[in-house]
Image 1 (spheres, rainbow, N blue to C red):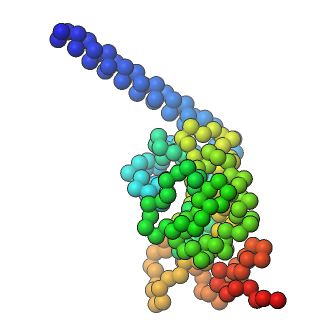
Image 2 (image 1 turned 90 degrees about the horizontal axis):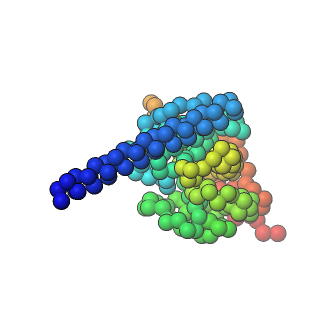
Image 3 (image 1 turned 60 degrees about the vertical axis):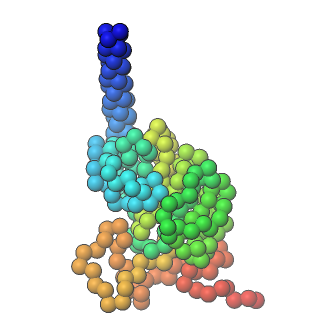
Length: 246
């Protein structure tokens, strides 16, 4: 009997080792595919950046800063810096950075997904097949106009979550996604990043002077030098009252 249990344990051990080896081979193959994809488009590839996930804290990256970013691709898309990486075996993440950050964050996710756990994220409502949450509902209502509705309805289903944090706009998709899906995800997140330029910029407390700017939330120029933000369609700007009645 003892010999039988010993034999079963040995078989289980060998099987576990074989699975780990297969997983290692598949990860190496996936990394090679992404490296080739990045090189073909003129992007930079880095095998691993352990500290990168700690840059963000919401949605798919909430409490995930202990995981490393692997198979990292970085570059410029439509004039904005982006990262694409795997959060180990959890998800593939796309992050696009705007020039000016905002204190208002928005979360756009499929209806089938759980709501965000952030206490400051409030439910705004449904938008096509997705649900919208925001840290400021009044501002989010003005941003989520018909153009945003059309954008939400056009998103690929594999792009499960999109959200903003400061000057960053991010999206997540399954770790099994392919090169074409990476392109689609980067384009979608970049489009959303462009729409979020109308969000009010970060405002420092009066009299506060930062000695080291936060790269995720760059310090805005004085208000007098800010160019006017344009709303979409007939929507009023975030810093204006309701449109005058005829």
